[in-house]
Length: 317
Image 1 (tube, rainbow, N blue to C red):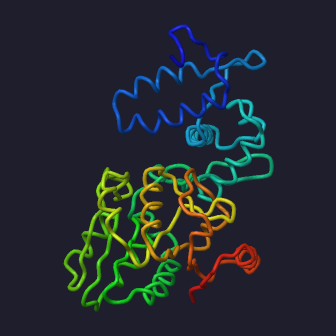
Image 2 (image 1 turned 180 degrees about the vertical axis):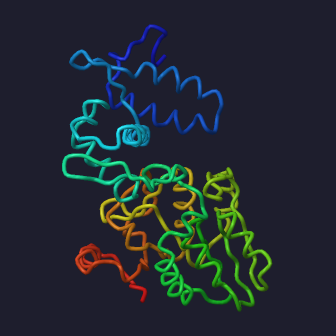
């Protein structure tokens, strides 16, 4: 047995606790019996450090507590949050930088202020939030990216479009084809394309997520293994030289990884706000990408860094 009824947190290395809490937290959403395991194991993952009980928590949970604290107190210092959550000030600064980029708070020198416009529906650090809200973000940039990407699509192709709002924008431009097959895990996109003449829509199998209007998981793995696509058009929550394309959902990342593997070419549709950010799960390295289409908001310095790393960039006007 891995641990007995009498096992205490002292028997576990903190990183091991964090690892199991993370995977149980994912599994509990899919398999009910894991909920009990998750709760019991997480209760074990308390440890004493300098006489203070501190919980080893996941990044999302920690950032949620930060946001809740800011809602109540309107402001907080880095040291204050570090002491409260039992993590290093470096970890807190990383959290605050990420949350500031997502407009969940306003980062200040030595701390953060509550951001009154933070949407409760917009989850933390890249978690999928409501699709219609994502569609409204950087709309001009997404239109420009899609306008360039549409020129890559030819008649008689089979393409993959993920459930991103950028891929949806591209999908809305798919008209005038006599024969085009579109594979997607985006429910809204599939419904929008199903009645367009000349387009055959294949929806991947899996678990439906209500907020992001997507299908996650590999229940349709047999189908994906039998289909070859000419181009996989994908977006991401974050894009960096080190981690490539990253997403919040591990399940959706698995699906995209398989679709990229089955595609002759992969084109990433990434607006400039996604550069130099990362989420939980990597699903494609920069070497997996044939082309990255972005918008003119990308700085020259960032463009130069990515091109030196071997990324083929197309800047949409």
